[in-house]
Length: 314
Image (tube, rainbow, N blue to C red; front, side):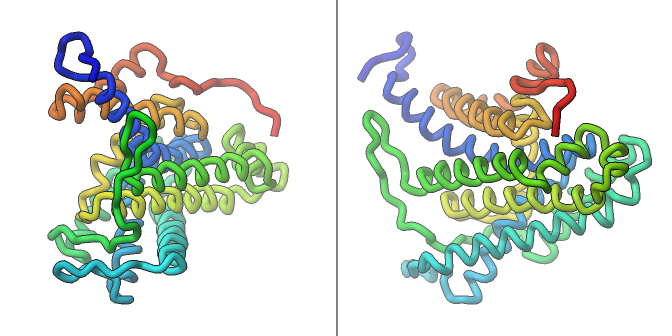
């Protein structure tokens, strides 16, 4: 064990926290991409996005409960792989529908209003979902079914829980798939065109309303994946679980460059690693890391690490 700067913290402990931070940052990235996609198209911060993440976890919890896969006492029924896949897909579909409904009812009527009106509406939708969740689901924490039997996997000098390895792998696949969708498909080109100039995109025959709805749907589906993954690793659901997670994911989006999908991924990973490494010395200060980073980014480089301005050929 190598002491680091005579602080009692070892180099191996730092490596362990970096590995844990990559898993945490992968979830931040999944949620941050929803912020960055909506902002890229509408120049709107959807502060209700953290609550969509919360709903994603609950949309998997209740079907698992109805199917009889919740743990009772010491019994932990194993969930078949096919059922796990169905819960993921069902949660993504339900959150995509919620995202489109939020856009249709809350944001579309204000599309030609001031940004302040849209921002206040976003905060109102967030509060509505938080309090509605407490009324509908109850304020008491709920235990999530065991998707994967947790065990430690040795990866060289670090040991990582298998659930965290699943989080990293699933997040990598989802983020890569989303990036390819936006860059290589016609709907993705429509999203980029609307992001560049919505009025011109409409004149070119792009259905702007449909494109914006698709943007909300895809961002919400990614948040749902994050919600299920976190619930699988930390099986404790509450209706307020999306509040702090949503704020941190927003910081990750700003850090990476809001409007950039690779930036959201990079910002999420960097934020997760920074929080975990600081937590090696003090768990108290680790919760403040995100907000310190937000202040520094806004002061030094408001466009973020990968943010850029300029024209793009779509």
